Image 1 (cartoon, rainbow, N blue to C red):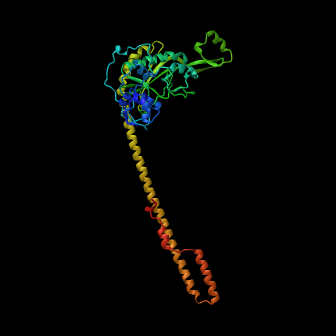
Image 2: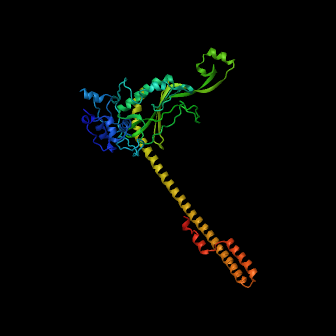
Length: 433
């Protein structure tokens, strides 16, 4: 039996537009290759479209199972979330689209029982991160710098990698349990990762760090309603007195006192250096350009962040209206700046128009005076030639021939004498704009 007899034709128009609901219906009714051929795109590109639409696709072997009478579950279409594409047509880019100002949900108190999670479950944002981070190179203070950038926003040393990812996983699962979606920032608008100072007690004057700490290509965000809040988990550093021993700096507090006494008489020196503390910090920030908001939760020697996660979830939920207000203010300021810029451009263009008009008028006047002077020269030359011609007639034949020959040479040398042509070639002020 041919594929045409087994599968019907897609119901959508070739190339779209096709809604999210229609795409979901088609990918569970027909193989991806058949839908892709219908829309004249590759099946891999259509898979990207489904990802942008947040449309679940059949797993490998789905159609074979159905053909053999075996069950293959079909998950429901999830509700559209922030950044999900609603309608697609062939030729559309899968990049940013204009979205309204985010809206926060109604304030609510999250009950502790809502935040119970499975300790064995891994959040999709964290899956596979341990292996990639573990293979990264180690930079100053032991921080990991993986080669891949599309990773969960975690900046730690190798000893703290596993605890940090476990903490991030628990936080993300609790946020999801509270109804907030955690993901890599979508492409529906600009989401910027805020910079941070990894010092436990940041110095008054920011320090330039080289090499720079690792940073992801897309921030990790949680959506409270449609409000995005960026999340970074990093290991803090502290400044300690250190001694240079065997090619490396070691905190003086970690050098045994007996060894320290021996060092005091040998060739070495002490300085102050930054060292990773092993303590973590969760930092939330506003990823919308122009809106400045951030909040941090730090581990201390007496308390870990694990016991604060429920409170952090509640505080992030409560922060959404604050961020919305800041975004509205930032967008209003951006709108005002845009209007001011347009007004400034209008004034510059008006000044330029007046300048060009004045310049054209001055140049036209100068050229007209040159035409008039040329007309005056023509009149004088013509009067000269006329006077010569009238005087030649009284000369003897031989002299008259010489005079007429020289007159002809003079006319040829001067060229055409046409004042009207010079005026017609003159460009007035309006012709110059």
